[in-house]
Amino acid sequence: MKVCPKCSAQYPDMWNICEACKVSLKKEGLLRKVFAKPRPCQVSTLSLLENVIEQSDIVFLYIDKDKRPMIGNQAVEDILGYGREELFRDDWLDLLFKDKAARKLMFKAFLDSCLRSIKSRVYECSVMKKDGGECILSWRNAAVTDSSGDISGIICTAFDITEEKSSEDDVAIHSERLRNIFASIKDYALLTTNLEGKITYYGKGTAELFGWKQDMTLNDIDLIFPDEVRQKTAERLKKSIEEYGKFEGEAILSRNSQGNFPAELTVTGLLDTRGERVGYIYVSRDITRRKELEEQMVQSEKLAAIGQLAAGVAHEINNPLLVISGRLEMLTMKNDDFPDDIKRTLDTIKGQTERMRIIVDRLLSYSRRKTPHMDAVDVNEILKTVSPLLAYHPEFKGITWKEEHGKDLPKIHGDFNQLQELFLNIGLNACQAMQKKGALAIVSEEKKDGFVEVRIKDTGPGIKKEDMEKIFNPFFTTKDSGTGLGLAICNSIMNAHGGKMDVVSELGKGTTFKLSFPVKKE
Image (tube, rainbow, N blue to C red):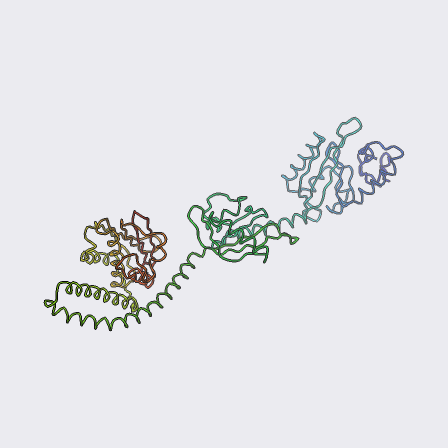
């Protein structure tokens, strides 16, 4: 028990201020008043309660209506470092908040709020310890009423959450760091989903890869797959994850409204701290350029093999063809002695022999493709030589010709003669497709991506969809008299010049060849 040195009133050990004299006690019950006046049967219960409160690691403070501390337990000293005698005075808030005026005002505001209402108030607040350090306390303040229902003071309890907050701050820092890493990765698309397949997070690289202009969080992951392969792809992923725990492979993905593209895709489980799966991680990368290079390599190997075959075939055909041509020439010298039907037969043989000679020449030209003699060339200067050469061909008659040459085009690395052959072959194909009626346009311009582009556009019948992938294959042709080597030669010239050739065609409206050449760097 504690005794008031002035009036000798006795108080429990937790009591620190005499209610009557307002002086510090030396070493006895407002606590009893706080919990209502005890009956004889409650004395032992209150004594036990006092001991529990005194020994608790939770701060207990009773503050009167003047906002002065009257009761405090041992945790006050253990956590704050102040003895109860030095803390329980009128300027106690100055000790807890020192130069933190804003925090002091906030704390007093919560106390005032409790004195106006019996509603409990919960908040977090940092206070200063005696050693100069800070601790973060989670406070719960509640008003205390007397027997008449009037508010007589405030019970404040507080938990020390300094370590928890420090851990939360560390987690927040790591989370922010991970988000920054996600946002910085642009070559790969990284995103996460929950178990229901809803997108929960994605980085900047993901938005750029898929062309997302708005927040796609909580959308279905299925939207990254094209409609036509969505179900099939979902089944592949599900089967692989069930069997192997993950999916690794190639897939066709959808770039919003800009079309589809091939991609490398990896799907793995997203685990929580207990090792339980809570979602999935998707990592994808656009491999369009890699696919193009692989296709070019396959095409190059195919062309090289065909070139060797063509050279051998041309050589074997050329010798007997020379004999046939010689004998035919001898027969035509006696043309006057033959009847008309034989003359016509000889003319037919001569025409077909000439055709065979042209095919052999083209085979040899294709198989013996020379390494281009690269120099700085002006595309416009080459294009100006094409129209006069086309004018000699009968297919050119009846065709409307239009040229638009870009001004001050940068030069490119190229072989003048091979590029001339390239433009001439494509132009001649266009004229043949239009069958002496239509318009042919050749446009050159500089592109912003460091390329010079030449577009050769005709108004012919167009190319069928099923033929688009075959037009550069050797010997593929839709013409009755074609050899199928013209565009194959054009393709090899483009590859030798490091360029790119795209074909856009629409049935009944025409075809456009887009030829892009890298600008020569100084």
